[in-house]
Each structure stands twice: as structure tokens, then as C-alpha cells.
Amino acid sequence: MVNSSNIYVDKEFISADWQQAIARRTGNRIWTLTRDNQIKELI
Image (cartoon, rainbow, N blue to C red; front, top):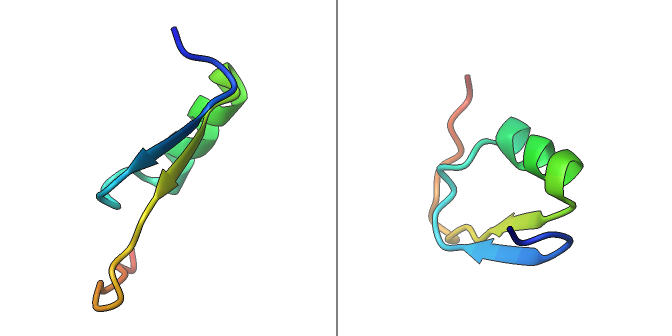
């Protein structure tokens, strides 16, 4: 298992809640890159 790492992904389909849970459990920081023309979904 990978711990205390920066992980970069190219899609923003990973929720902020999930990212925070992973950070608490493993110490990994997940970075999602967004496009300039990407529309944020409001839920």
C-alpha cells in the first residue's frame, strides 16, 4: 500500500469527501486537475 504520497489524477470524478477519507486513512493527498472550461456540479 502507498502511504503519505501525492497522487495526481486527470479527472475530477473523485469526491472531496472520498479524498479526505483517503487522506485521513493513508496520509495520501489526491490532487484532481480541472480544465478551464470545466463546469462544477452543484449538489
